[in-house]
Length: 443
Image (spheres, rainbow, N blue to C red):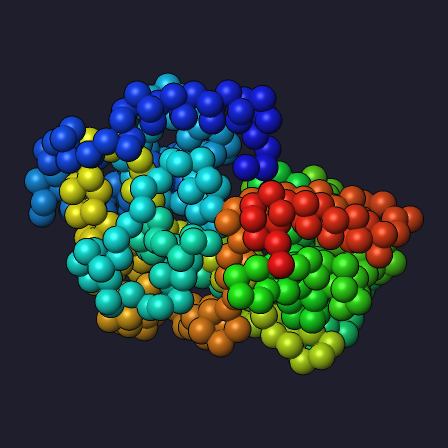
């Protein structure tokens, strides 16, 4: 994972390989099972947050119903490194709730066990798209879907109204709005201290690639072309280059991106929007409650991102899976917890109404009606984007090295206005080809 020290990662991986051998990973797991053993549950949420509280409530309700004891640990920064360390110390949790994008890396390292989808009660109630996010490149399932999400534009409506501009319907209109926010003093303080775009452009955890993916696709570009499960790099295609050039122009020509973007993670980017330093932020629904509190719901709007130059609309689809970790002493308990989490009751608990405690953004259970749980109609924007134009990352065996490599390259391009975009992306395509060959996924 990005941000993980390579030496530490190698040591942890070797140590975990030893752990699996010590645990007899290839032996019959039923011989060492305890249906009453406590489930240690890790969730990638900030400690002390309302999302941690919701996870604990979900686990406590499950325990009350099943009798299976649980303990929840919320971790956020360097989550994957801490998971590696736990593996090296032979203290891997039983259940991890984390991003769908982590699936390939977890499978590659042998940290998760395969899930027989048909044995999970309620599996047929989940949307087919959500199950796709739990499927590895080999067609097997290595997690149980728990939450889905898409992305949309958060725009300072009060600024837009003051400047007399319409909501953007094209990329050109979006750029014009960003330029106006940068040059026309939308907050009226008489100072040139506002910008258009908020961009979490750090390379850590592949943030800038994660942010830019939707725009790459809407611009007609792509990471790969796929045929019969094999992949060929497309990141240096004319449309991919054009999309990156458009992105670079916001940094270098229009200068509409808030300063510091190339080192920002989301934790640094959120305050840029909510404190009025920039007025356009492409992000997820989980930020609405925070921005309502810190900025004011009346000051911004949530709208779908406009289509790209060719009329293509796209949004990265993401979510979180429940991963059943390898080596658990209570595999039956792992499955029972996943079954409860995806039930109507579990999903409703995880959605946490309209509060910022949600660990289920968009429900994956088709029997849960969004409007019956949440009264905030802005959630419907994300639901429609997800259903209409949501796309998950390519189903290569392990997406993580591709996301990190593309993040390093895109970050370098926008950070150096004299960079040769075509040459940099051609070199990235070569890196992709080597990694595809390494993963036995090259077309």
